[in-house]
Length: 500
Image (cartoon, rainbow, N blue to C red; front, side, top):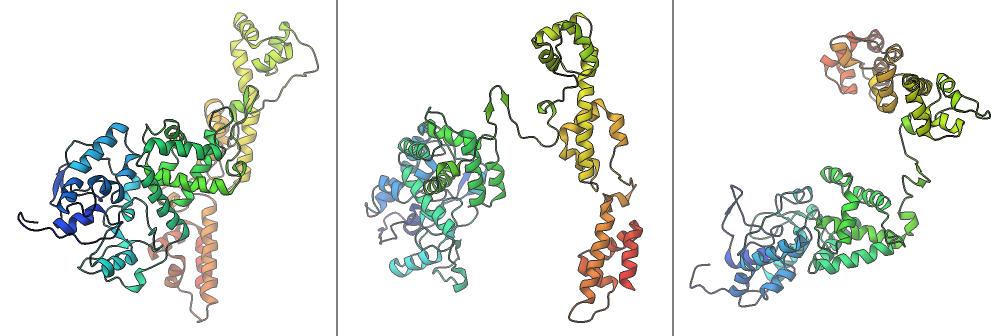
């Protein structure tokens, strides 16, 4: 708007963003240089492009004061959760007056899903055009990860250029119940952001009602993290956020924000998901929502979930007869029978430190180390052999993933036996090893060739099984098909029989 011109303010949608109002009054905002890149000024996820006081003065208060614009037409309160208290005040001052240095947050995974482009509800934009005669961008549609309209329940679509909204009928689709509920929770979180400290206290009360807070005042952090992580993984399908949910301190950070009474910062979309989790906890009993602790304490021992051989957490067999009575004079004989220091302490009814002192004094350290290795040797060999028999077609590296502790022990203490017990793996050189990595690969490919031959022959249209038809049915190129035929006699026989 040029100086001297009169600004005419017309009614607008009550949920239209302040940036959309500024575009209607002032036109498109000038580009600004930020981080060495020239781009449109966008604060609070693009809902603020000019100072709100300047916008309120231009309209002579028709749209409300700067504070009313901030509370009712921006996502500033939504952004407040991801800032410290000092940053919140500086950010609000910058939005109101346009003055002040702030550090805009980077493009985190939950922001990337929103950029680039503007998402709008076709029903809301059409209603604003019919009622107010303008194209409106509503601030709830600009929040990250929102894919539905909280008001009409329609899926958001990219905005179309042009003076009038002309969306085809197939672009208007109904959103799922979960998408609309996520949009409603986003609006609620934005309203709670006006006072982050009070919002943290309300979340703390609801979390305590869900059974996460124990009577002693501590929190069931492990159970909450597991349950909340599964809920978030089911609600959000973004792979970048799935990696974010799998962080070790994911649930702990949420509870830390609650305990800090809003002083700490947290990604606001986590609070949106937390509202959904609390809603689910209110409908179901807390004992059913929270899983049992993964590592329950039992005296001084700790029951751990392990894959394969448990290593030092496994129950070692006792090679000596526990019904007899032993003393310190029998320590050397027990070591020769492959008893460990802990077992000798139990059999002799003395402490482990006493046994260790006796072993050091009498020069039996090498015998004790050999006893410890020999006692574990049988269990480790049995675990590795059992895994090999269970998966006969897998290579040594595949078995290694199933028995990581056993493999590490065998490499360190029993490498010769491990080499003898390698899988029945046909060591091929060159390109054959890449095509047929395991002994079962040739049989699998031959079975696929036979299955493709039956499919071609038994079709509605009688077709001749040719090399090209087999390639199409198998989904491979003729080059790979010929390489298969040359790599294994079993595959070659199946192909020859199919082409007869």
